[in-house]
Length: 248
Image (cartoon, rainbow, N blue to C red; front, side, top):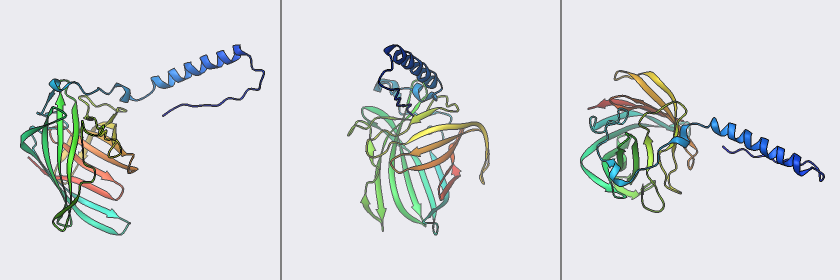
């Protein structure tokens, strides 16, 4: 958010008054800046030697929870409703993106029983415990055939940079850029609550956080709940809701 103003004072405003006004404006801007969320404090990606493909953040425990299944619904145009199932598994092999070692997560999305998208997502964790997202390879599928690669990007290519997926110690008001791929994905996430209890059909989770995720290129907002020891357990947006139904 920027602060801008235009002042017209007449042709005979003295330089002294102008200087006073500018000083007051600078002071006000400084006070406003001090109230900005912690997005300015979000860490920058360290060099490759500071990353590991072992991701064991309590809220992104890929190392200990390699398999998750989500189920839910998606509604389009207020009348078309699809049953959605998302299956994710962390592959045993690792890879490198932008010379950074990454964990590889294989994700398959089904709608009404038909595979519609298959992705490989890449994550890494730095020495401070922050989890980074380094892109995704995407296959869009229709009638069993690959028909496109919408949303595909990799850090280090075409100006894309690693995105901060989850801070080591998320706190309310903290905003961070999860995807930094110009023209493709610029999603950002804000922590809106911590210490939550989340009830699902699977079980009740404690000490969870809630984030508000905004995709400016799509003008879409989602709310997500992450819980210690399991990771993402619920995702909600306009016309859609997914909930964790299995993990191991």
